[in-house]
Every structure is written in C-alpha cells, then in structure tokens.
Image (cartoon, rainbow, N blue to C red; front, side):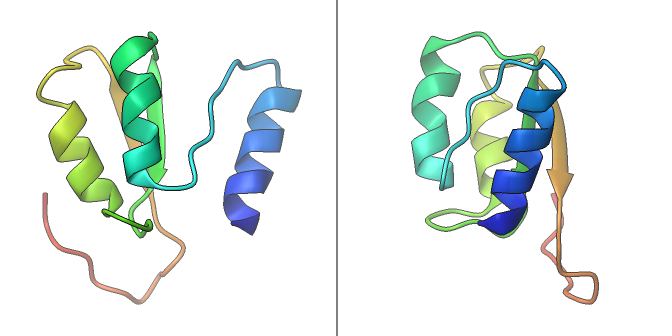
Length: 80
C-alpha cells in the first residue's frame, strides 16, 4: 500500500492523470471504460496477481503499454 501511494502521488505531482486501484479486480472496470496509455502494476497484488491482470487485459487492449514491478527481489515469480 505504501508503494502504491508513493507511486500514485509521484505520478500525479509530475502532471500525469492516473487512476489507482487497490487490487486487480478493481482495476478492470476503469480499463474497460476509459482510455489508458500505460498499465503500471505490481506483480504481487490482492485478488489476482499482476501477471493474471496483464494476461486478461492484453487480449483486448492491444495498444496499452504495460510495466510490471515487484518489490520482492528474491522471490521467483511465475513466467508470462
């Protein structure tokens, strides 16, 4: 949560319009109705992980740029 708040505040302070979601399921609704240029997500998220979110939205948002990040340097994640 602290990282999400920091990144959200930094992007907003830099003049970017952004929408924050607390989990992957909450992120799906704005992605379906609004136009976004970038999806920035943590890999480890509540409800479904960031990789599952990317696999779901990349099927219908072909122009969306995606950046996944992870705060767990030693944790091995599943492959895309």
